[in-house]
Amino acid sequence: MTDQNQTNNKIPRVDPNLCIGCGLCVTTCGDVFALADDGKSYVKNPSGCAKCNCQEAIDNCPAHAISWLEQS
Ligand code: SF4
Image 1 (cartoon, helix red, strand yellow):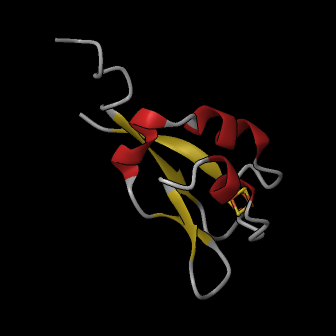
Image 2: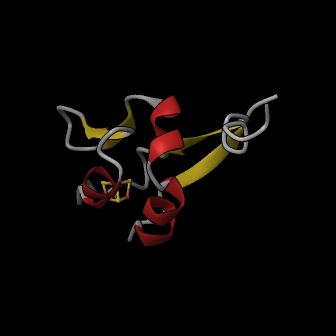
């Protein structure tokens, strides 16, 4: 019952004030991130991170704009 729950209580978030719109997170986690019309990344599907590696996107973001948002 716990095999899929490890990341269910936290979702990635993008700080639009920090994002420089490089698109790397979209390349890394295209199921989760997308670029908006303003060129900034946003989280289009938080639950999509169950099947990709959002930690990699967080670690590689050159602007350190992605972080985990803990949910209870
Ligand atoms: S990797 Fe970081 S700076 Fe680049 S688009 Fe994604 S959130 Fe923005």
